Image 1 (spheres, rainbow, N blue to C red):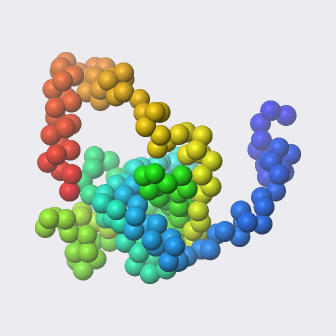
Image 2 (cartoon, helix red, strand yellow; image 1 turned 135 degrees about the horizontal axis):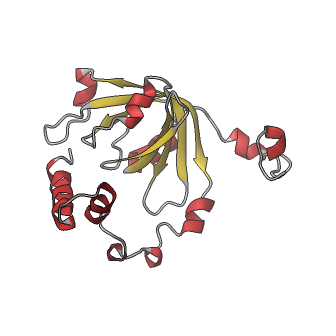
Length: 204
């Protein structure tokens, strides 16, 4: 057997989880988790579509850009992006989401899983005004699971170690990649300039 397809197959390779690994899911946002979220400027959100295909999308802002409404509810503003609406479109079929919160320099991260819905309630939107600019919508997450993820992955990656950083100049720029992949008759530098301009003009 080379493929693992069932729970029974998995347990021929992996030991059962420890009591701590199971029990650490408190299924709510307590004071510790609320403080972690208040310090976090970045997260990744996972969702899945009706066809079962999954999507993971980055989200970022000032530390605490995700608000804890109460111990069972989070609110996250949707800022300008590429308008593909991959995550939102998935929610129309499957509202389940997984969030992974990071804090620069921390080797542990926070996992929150739950069900999401989108809102354009005016009072809710006003919570997230940035220099007078409201978000385009707000995602409300009903928390079902919440627990710290162990630091092994970040330790193995050396994610926050300056010595592991790669010089961006050693890899093609986004403009070069788009030009090649989409076979565009446009200088790569012009595409890069347009991307940089858009990031400046539509950051919020």
